[in-house]
Image (tube, one colour):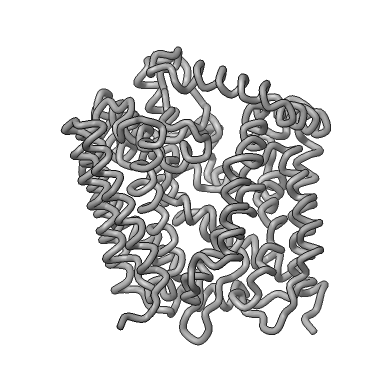
Length: 515
């Protein structure tokens, strides 16, 4: 008789769900491109499920496991069910379905092979040892966590004071402004207190009342600054960590308490939270030019008037998203109606990116120049000044999606709307099919770095910055800036995030001594 295994049950349930959806898809939408898409989606999920999703890998390669697990859910499992519920085929509004699914197959194969290569060469040694010496794995007290959260609140309040001014522009912030912007994420550090044993504390009571009051205040600040990411990072990271604890401790699913929490969570995500996110999105542009109090009032009024909110969202969707690709900018990312699901399981954006890349030509010289400018952008401005680099690097502060849409539509000026795009389309536009070889080695480095951020040898410790950033790892392979996200992580952001935390934590430890 097999022992109870929560992860195995989840994997089996998802596989059965996908097979059921594929049967319905083939009956409701009997087209060859849909069948090919279903085969690729099933291949991707089974490849991930059978070779990566193992409890041992969750312990020893915690962050890579999370990233690949949710890549499988978001881009291979979810699209089948979500599109069917809305009466759409999996290839809804696709332009190049065969190219899209073929490259999706290449992409998942590259990612999984990179993971297993990392697994064979990774050892808890030199890199994790460096983080330990820096103090990254030191266990903070509750007082120290609250103090670091206070620093995050200070950074948030600073951003509120410059809201509606030129100081909000990246090129005008300077070093201080950039540090303040990065420190805002520390405001949600107290979430880690809900999981004390996983960051190294023992026999610690959880201050639930204090946390409820505190995060009510954080949500208020997030609304005022229209920082949806801050609000959702906290909520989703808490929910995701609770789910991972179920896997780590092999807890049984679907207990009465669990069912109630799932129902409440689904209601909040699909109802009030989704409406609030929509109101924040619709007021995003006005937030850059208005004061914090005015922004909060505008968002709350729109959120409270459901009919007005619904009509405003529909108008924006019709004019900018769902117009069959015939709107002025012709960059239609619309895939499913649910605004949250449309961001995390959007295969149409990948199709759109590949369509533009194919028309413009792979291994494109324009993308070569973008890559050169991107690498220059990773170097801090003071260092560039020393070497006499006078070009304003912020002139190149746009995404691969911006470049693709600008070139594909023949726009005279660069569109700087920070458009997201699919990994494969970005890669082919840059390097052609040799991109997958390059991506393989980059992902090996990324998984090696990720693995070093969690200690597993003597004691399983997840540092608190990782606990509060689980949303970032969950959506690591989502549509964004493609391989350039990983290059940024390796060249700058990964080390920068660690140093910012250990410096702040070090200063706090000098002020608040551990008892």
